Each structure stands twice: as C-alpha cells, then as structure tokens.
Image (cartoon, rainbow, N blue to C red; front, side, top):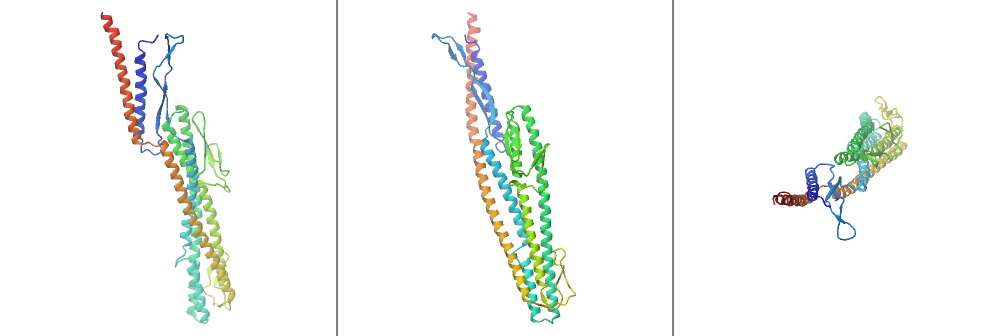
Length: 409
C-alpha cells in the first residue's frame, strides 16, 4: 500500500534536486571568468520505485521521484592530456626561440659594430699599411683596429658566458618551481582523498597546477580510484625520489621549459666554441706578416688575447690573406646557420601556439561555462522547482481534505 505522504516525499526530492541544480548553475555563472574552472553539473536519476498491488497477477511499479547521484565536473581527460603534451612542446620551443633571439643580439650581424665589421676594418688597415710600409700612422691604425677587434670579441665572449650562466640559473629555478608544484599537488591529493572523490573545486586547482608543471617538463598523469593523481615524468633524465625532483648534470630532457633550457645551453656552447675558433684563428692569420713582429700576443684564447703595442709591424703576406678569407667564411657560416635556426624556431612557436589554442578551444567547448547555456538552464530548473513546489502544495491540500475535513464530518 502506498504511504499517505508519498506525494510529499516525491515533491521534497524534486525540490532538493531543483535547488541543487539552481545552486550549481549559480556556481557556474559566478565562476564563468575563473581561470581553470570546469563547468559542473548535477547528475540525477529516478529513485527506486515502489511495488503496489494491481488487478494483474504481478505488482505494479510506482515511481518515487528523483535522486541526486553526484555533482561532477565536465571534463575530457583525452583533451587534457593533449593540452599538457602540447603545452610542454610549446614551452620547449619558446625557450629555444628566446635563446636564439639572445644569441642573435650577441652576434649582432649584420651590423656596423659587429665582429665582421671589426675584421673588415682591420683588413683595410693592413691594406693601407701594405701601400705605405714605413708610415707610422698606418701602423698605429692597424693596432687600433686590432684593439677594436679584441674588444668586440671579448665582449661577445663575455656575453655568451653570461648567457650560459643565466640559462643554468633559469634551469635551477625551473626545477625548484616544479618541485613546488609537486608538493602542492601532493597536498591537494590528500585533501581530495579525504574530502571524497567529488571535490570538484579542489580538482580544478590541482589540474591547473599539473598544467603549469607540464609547461616545465612533460608529465604523465594517472588518476587513481580514490581520485588522487599519480604524476610521473616520462623523460629518463629526471629522477623523482622522496617527493623531490632532481636533474643530473648530464641529463637529456626533451620538451618543456627545462628541456628547452638544456637544449639552449648546448646551442650556446656550440656557438661559443665557434666564436672562440673564429677569433683565435683570425688573430693567428693576422700574425702572418713578412718582417716585423706579430700584431697579436697570446692567441690561445679570446680572454688572453692582447695587441702588441710596441711591435714594429711587417707587411701582409699571401698566407694572411688566405687565413683571413677562411676565417671570415667560417664566421659568415656561423651567422647564416644561426639566422636559419632562429627563423625555424620562430615558425615552430607560431605553429605550436596555433595547435595549443585549437586544443584549448575544443576543451573550453566541453569544460567552459557558457553564460547563455547557464541562463537557459536556470530558467529550466526554476520551472522544475516551481512545479515541485506546486506538487507539494497540491498534496498538502489533498491531505488537509482527508485529515481535517473528512474528520469533521
């Protein structure tokens, strides 16, 4: 037999679901512009039905209303994984592009104040001296042009050394930042497990941290049955023990800002080595004179390179001209290759940005809050709530008739 208050219970459940739906919609609207927020929805299903006797042999099923199953985030984990992978790829490309830009500014070619101009000016000074070997002023000009070359080379050498130090400091800071994110993720894991698997807002905060972490290094995320994240690093270069992320000196990391910084260090080392070779070979070639003393002293390195102010210079030889030509050709190759690599890095960044934005747009179409959609839902849930209230009011009138009016008769 159906309870006398069955209608009230059905209406009460409908009111509860309507109230939860309206509150969740309001939460969505309030966080429409909150970074990292995922749209939430109330998942509902029909309550277990009641068996009632009918004229047939089998009992009938009388509905008992609606129940709230859960309130969940609307997310697509496959899009999330794509976003993390692409974020790591973009961060890697952006870091390399920034390094190439800085290298180009150090090389500073083509320019009237670059190393190529300094080499040309010294070659021209030698030509003037060859035309007038006994000219004191021509000898002085050669020495001054040599000093300008040394100053330019030393400035570039120092800049590249500073750049390598800066990249190493950035790498250390990025690893420290990654460790900080890992600690916050671990703390949120504990809160989510303790608060239940449907801690939606905490999960949003954790996903934001994972996305920031993925920009530093490629990550792999496995969600456990209790809602906790197991975050690992597929790159073999990282070691993660006792909650601490470390990076060995010889680690090879592909992807992310950290991987980009490591690759940038390699590229700076490569160009720095070529610069040292160009400068020292050029100085050696300029010492190939006939008669007189060498122009440069200690050509073993840029840092030790000096100009022999007191030397009486001889005249240029064919070996000098050949050596200078070879060195300038090597330097032009360095500049050309660097320019091509920089252009390639710029194109890669543009392509990866477009790819990541496309994925983000698809993800927002799933997880993002649409105010138009939420307003439509608000009207729908309002009508549902009003109808449930009307059901309770009608049931109350029926019970009033049965209990009060029939009893009076």
